[in-house]
Image (cartoon, rainbow, N blue to C red):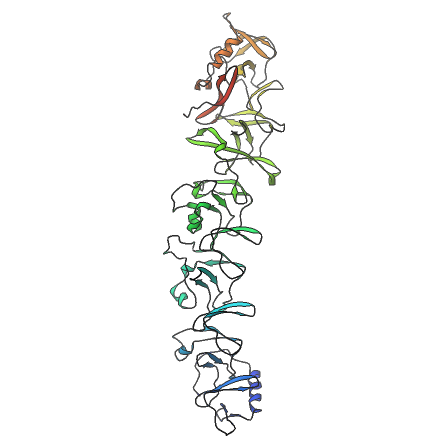
Amino acid sequence: MRKQTKLVAVLSAAALLAVGASMTSFAGWEKDEDGIWHYYDSDDEMVTDEWKKDGGKWFHLDEDGEMETDTWVDDDYYVAEDGHMLTNEWKKTMADEDEDDPEDGGEHWYYFNNKGKKVVSDTKKINGKTYLFDSDGKMQFGWQYDSVNDDMYYYGDENDGARVESQWLWLEKSGNLSDEDIDDGQNKGQCDDSTSDPCDDEGWYWFQSSGKAYHDTGKKKINGKYYMFNEHGQMLYEWIDGKAVEQGSNAQLDGNLAKGELATTSVMRYYNEVEDGSRGNGWVQRDGSEAMKTDNDTDWYYIDDGDMYHANTTDAAGTTDDGDPVYVMRKKVKVSGNKYFAFNEKGQMQDGLQYCQADGGFYYFDDNGYQKTGRVTSVENDDDDYTFYFNTKNGKNGLGYNGLKDDYLYFNGKRLDADDDYRLYYYDGDIYLTNTKGKVQKTSKKYDIENKGIAEDDVKVEISGKKVVSVTLASGKTIKAEDLIADAEAQFGKDVVTEDQIVSVPFIQLYDDDIYTYTDLVGTKAVEGWLGLNK
């Protein structure tokens, strides 16, 4: 019998003894002085190059009549160390042609069916798991590409090989496989750097119950959660440009580099960080999207099934800030106690004083983004701090208050204060006199007036029902209320409202290049709006 050179798994001594006992009990078997088994037929002739069955197992005799052990037979069958033909068994060994030259190939796993023949060019379910074998019977592993159906599978590693099913795996993209790996039981597949839409070097893949890697572009519900994938099967995460999802990698989908254009909020989706990847819900604080040029800022976003709360074109304020149009939306967030928050057109949560075009007024949001009501001090406006009051009633809840409240005068929430003495203010067709705390004066007497053009001490002011009727200067000149009103209304639509006039026209400067004030007079009704200094 030819000497075996291949290394194999060694059976236990007990198993060998058991086989030996079986052999000696069978009259056709005989062991020679070298311990090699032979089989003799009824004519006492040694059987050669033939299979013989003993104790329910098959054994093979070579051309010299020696029972073969631990070797291939006819390149399709394999006999174990005790000589029995492997059936429904795994064997890790070298290919038949490589046995004489072990350095030429490596060991591979083979599976032999219930007839003892190696499985070739097929998938086979073994003990509830599916395996793939090539035309030589080698168990395949790693990435496997079905070019006919354009499907990718993953078959574990070189010592397992079971097809991955109904499972997530973090894997290196198939295109990164080395030639050595490819020749050793893997194949490259369709995602490599030679394509126009390369994948990320590594990523999450979802393998369906069929073993196919899911690779349709768009969302997919898995275990009750939604995920998104590119056309190569990589799970997408964080910021995703929904319009460009076919393009491949996460970097492309965020940056939209292939298109070279700025993504809009309406198409951007957020699908959590790479450790999760499911469709985002709730608050997230993170850097913005490269595609929207918000990646240099860390902000709060509220995600509703992947979509950002964000202002739309209908939420345009009608002005600009540093040349960019202003968009602000006020939105109620249920998971935060059914409270209102503000968001701009890029989905970034806003704080501080905000103008909402949809409501035609001003709101205030604290450092945590919560809308405030009632009296709020130290509201930054026009590079200074002011006191504001915001409605507490339903319907106008949070909206800046207009008019008199507890004898204080407010313009869209801003309390109209004097700087040092007393100040005359125009409000909605009337003239009022306020002190440094915004308190409206009700008594006719002499006051120190600080308004430009009329500024002097001991100005006699006649007041009726909290409204100014006239002012009399030290020179004896009396200016009636209707003249004061006319002077103020003459300033509507002019940037001089930012200066102290005989009567101050109230304004709010929320943006560097525009102010909110009275802009026109329709009949006898003063009209509010942005002055348009930016135009």
